[in-house]
Image (cartoon, rainbow, N blue to C red; front, side, top):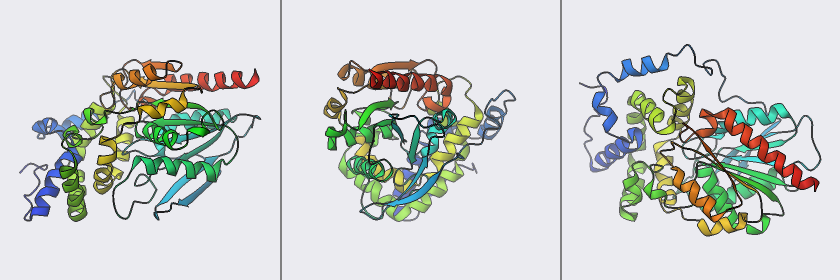
Length: 368
């Protein structure tokens, strides 16, 4: 029997959970066709003596303060703050907002670069249901709530002074929700925004919600999925663990654009994915599938914006970033060759260079 053949559930809820487990855990049936050889394939792909990140300690960063921030709904958020070692008056606090099924470690190399410079204060946090943050007790997650969560993090960590917001994927959508709710803060508090591999809308037409079909069929199916995880979440998570090699291959295929990405980076991203429970994944589906905040981008029109995307992004394709830039023609647009969705990990040097230039340009504006 194939190690990836999940026993047929005996109950109706179990059958739905099994279906959702397959959808959420492996996201595409095509790669499962070769399960007989996938272990050998993964072992071969993970063996790369030239992997520059083979000995990188992912998930561990220096911080000066770490705390739990409790939200009105009872969810507690894990927040970390890095104080500048060489503070420069007027430099903004940089707030890092990660994406779906990831955590603050998404910005491993950007945080590393900023901390090494020592002239910027850094705030990072795990979104609800991700990383070390708590999960929502009842109901679904909502991007508007994520926008308010960002506001609470800012109020707690940087109640005064300029800010630069950096969001990747769902993190960029969170910033758009924040802009929709608090447009008055842009230009006054928020002096710069960086949007990486994200979208202003039409997310149901991308592979961000896997499978994308779930974003198109509307409320009834999403309701069914939500209830399936309520009764069968452990079943789904067990199924995901049993297909870890396929998940690694899918992460490599959909997250990266380089023909031979760093195995260590692929493993790191897959680890972040696997730590996000099926319950959390499905309870985000509706808000991601219905995200449409192009009008909110108007709040960013009077402040500097940097848009970064990989030219081989299969999750939020280049056209989504191009649409953002069309609506914000003053934005700097950086398209990185041979990069997929996790552009800030896969091509960290190029992203860091673009980020450093952007921060320097803000400093030039301040000095005028």
